[in-house]
Length: 127
Image (cartoon, rainbow, N blue to C red; front, side, top):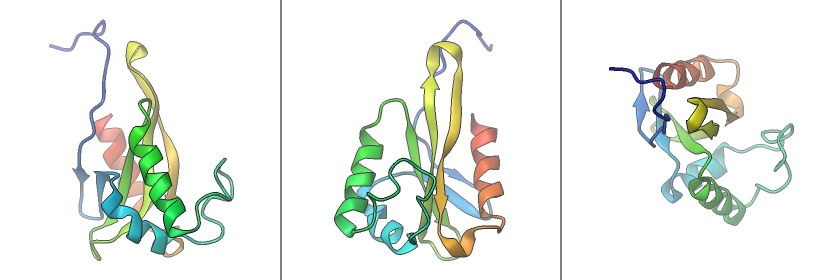
C-alpha cells in the first residue's frame, strides 16, 4: 500500500533502457567522463570552469558521491559502453516526497539526439 505520510528516500540504483544506462557515478567513470567533456559542457552551471583536467574530473566524481541531497548518475551510451555524461536526482526532500532532476550534461555528439529524452524517461519513470 502507498503511504503518503512515509518520507520517500530514493536509493542509488541502475536504470536501463535501449539507449542508455544510468549508473550511480563512481571513480571508474572518470576517464570516460573526461573524454566526454568539451569547453562548453559546463557553460551554464556553477562549476563551469572547475572541471577540465583528469584530477578535476575525479574530484567532481568524488564530490557527487559524497552529496547527501543528490544521487548522481553516469550516463552510459549502450551502443559504446562509455560514460558520456552525468545527470542527477537533486534537492531530494524526503519529507515532501519530492526531488528535482537536473545537473545534466552530455558529450557534444549526444546533444540533440535521443539520449537526453531516454535518460529523463528513465528518471521520471523511477522517481
